[in-house]
Length: 273
Image (cartoon, rainbow, N blue to C red; front, side, top):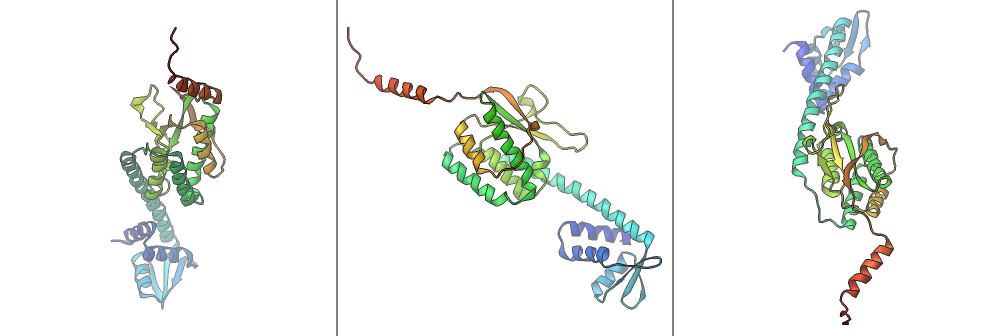
């Protein structure tokens, strides 16, 4: 390999958290000394000396290696290009994992509210300090508040795929498990609704948007309990809308008493005339 290929491979390995490659890249970027014609590095480590030669440095003095400014600029550009390519490939890997996770996780429809809240608490404890989870948690809080404000029809959340895939595989599984497994929300695909808003491609970001529909079996009280279980955050209401599907109307206390009395009276013998 030529020095450009060696440097590109080192950068990619560093992005993949390979310790040796990452340490060397940091050494090249952070331990250089400016010279009249470029930069110089001083090291007594044989492995670093060999790598410096491999990326195009000249060994002009004992333990000192130099590189012209033009060549260093080329290496900087190669690193930027390698980072862009690495991010693209990594995003594709995460998108593939998301699709796999969506297919594998199923609703836990037999959960009690107590069990559901306990699982939500586990999720919050694991992700509340994770900055990458802030947009997801904030968006979920917004959906719950939006549903409470619009009680007649089921609410829907247009969730950017990037919010689900911006961290890692473990986070993807946790997000989908919460939405689809614990909260039993429905992922609405494009061919299941009348409009084309369920899955759209952002021209600039090339990110899909997934449409999640509220669980129709969650009462207002259950939604409030879930909302209180999530950490407070700012809410963006632009991602929510109402579906055409009505929610189950909750009975008032008076209606429940009347229904209960009617049920009890039905067991009494009918009065014969």
